[in-house]
Length: 401
Image 1 (cartoon, rainbow, N blue to C red):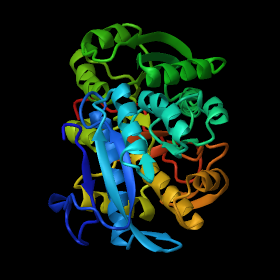
Image 2: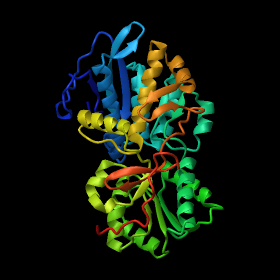
Image 3: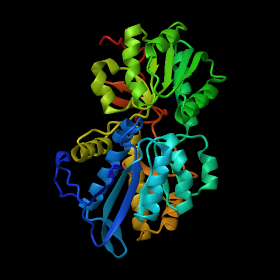
Image 4: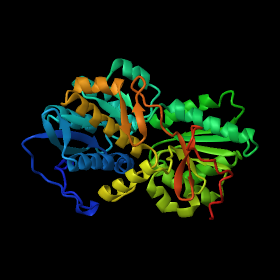
């Protein structure tokens, strides 16, 4: 079982995360849920925080409630897991196994933009709804035209880029920060898409791009990189980074004495492990996502913690869970796992989720919080400007807090 294949049926109500009861048994009547996820390799950190816990939470909660409510009666879920080892080719092989050998009734997507783009043709070939959450691509509208089963719950890179540019422009206009902006980014699909959209969003904004540099996956010499950035004296530092880089950048910044008024990082900023690693020093750090500390968020956070023994992140975790709520409601409205009808309902219906009413526009959900900031131990939402958004904390406090 080197692929990490596991099957689990519903666990007894009340079991804590440390007592997760995985079972190899197979019921006579189950809905089989399959997924290929990065449990090893460079994407494992993100997948292990954002995606996999929510898949397990959802299966646990559906089974605890008796199963999916289908027309013939409730049916429990059985999960089949594979490790794609952060390798797109491995992910494709695993999915083909799920589609053809395991005959999974539902197949959930992998973690990350590059992985989701790699497997999208396979989902389309077999007619399964592709609930892409951790994928940010400006290509989504074109992909939807080609593959109507392809969905994006996290939105488009341009949404995030434009929101960040608007925030910096507003801060500069109010005299709270200067107009000089430095950008670094990972050179994979995620970094290229976000940095390109942000560069475009800066045009005509009155902000000055004083540094723009990519770095390869596995890059670690952030002290040298940030020393070069510091030499350009930016007012805002923006890194479209992946988790390992996001976790490394604050430490490197503190070492080289780089603490601009705005310090923005990419995937991983909203992770609980980021707060655990840096404590009060993360105060004022900005990133993608954000939450409003309301009753819905707190209830979801507590359920997530109770079942998975870890807190959700403050960006894609609640969106992942909301995508599963939408999928469940679509299946139950159809009354059976009819993938064609489920895709149709996902395209046409509104769903009640922990994010509030969720409706996809041309297969894209555009209602997420886009920019957040650590304030007082919580990663609060700043943008878009709407009820619930917090006031930005600038300049960012010193690293020595």
